[in-house]
Length: 589
Ligand SMILES: *[C@@H]1O[C@H](CO)[C@@H](O)[C@H](O)[C@H]1NC(C)=O
Image (cartoon, rainbow, N blue to C red):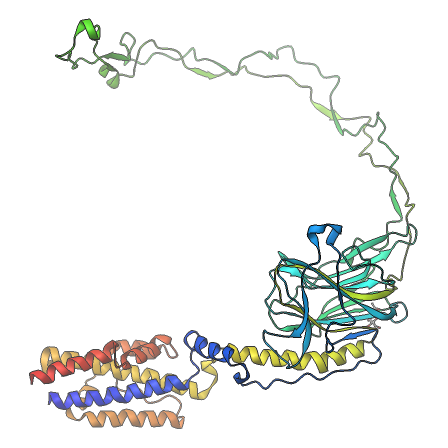
């Protein structure tokens, strides 16, 4: 009988072990464990991430003022700067640039880009336009791709549209018309700054877009698009969707047009200007009974000495228990005196020594007299300087007519290398920019996402698929089986068949097992087949193990799945324990 049961038990365990393990291998798995191994395998063997990458094909934009895909490398257009930032020798633009393909999340093969190669360096590089571009007639469209291959903790990734005509080495001192692109260090924003020439003074002032959008922080290629319309409105888009719209007149700080009036810098507050709203009443007099000298605290004359106060007892007395040491030599050590200790009588009394009256707050205390405040009859209000016409006033209602552009430059400080630029477009055609976005950027971006997802598979959504649902139910069923076998076998071994059977609450399966384990297995197999056929929820198996019931009521619980896996492991868990027990038992019988 026992041996028969043992064999059945082994069969059942083998069956469920095979099922559970096989199934685990088939399911992409719930995140953590399945994530590492395939990813690292794929990184080392790139073409095998299962994404077929599009190859680079040149794209032509005939009417662009500037269009750069870096297909021909840096030369002859791009030139690294030999200057220094702020003209200081230690701030030389020593950062290196390269034109090369992406190394991180490659979306397109053979696609060259301009790459920042050095960390913690000043970088500057620029390229001239074939001929200066004038934003006045049709506005301006500027678009380029940024890919942060090593991410960006601190650094710039913005471009400068350099004011024509270009002269000298490119540096931070080179006048620019507009600056646009992501910048990260602490807070992270998409800069948009334009420089405007004050027609009165001839000086340029910088105007920053208020509330700039936040750039994405990943290693994908992102497309930054700026449109300046001829009605002074601007639009900033990232990856083709508008992230900020505004007006050159209203949404920049400081405003491009200065105020009509300003405070007169020569106007001074007159010395007799009364701007105190309240003054002390000059007619008030100190009341005759006001004693400024009355002290805050006085002796409490009503206080009496507590009855238990011992006025004649000292606070300290000689220790009555102290004795002169036997080796005390009066000649050498001087006269012996007992050490002083707190007077033990005082401990029980209200106090000892001379008694003094306590202090109390003086009811006649008044303090310094001050006259009450009254409204100042000569009060003139807050003084403000006279307003005069602003001598630098002008009104430019067409700031979109930005200064002509002669070149494009990147002048950056960065802590991270790998910042990459590509597909730089400057012109006046929103249509061309959109075509570039659709034909050049989008396929690359999509491929990059596909590669990223292949490298980091997302955990499957278990609830979504019918098969996963079935597998989940199967796991629970197997956990149930394992636990019922385990607990029944334990009882059997401990207390014998009769007790084991009695202990089974429902008794159905246990009896069936005892009578014919095969029937029991077949029943479960049938239930499994019913499951696979898709009959919604299977008829509740006559299960009795309470722990298994808890697990199964918590339908897609990880605990249940884990219980199934653990109990099925041949080298550990309850399954392994059961096998070991089996060996011991058969030796005995
Ligand atoms: C400005 O011009 C653009 C392009 O013509 C247009 O889409 C936009 O609605 C205009 N905005 C305003 C405020 O007129």
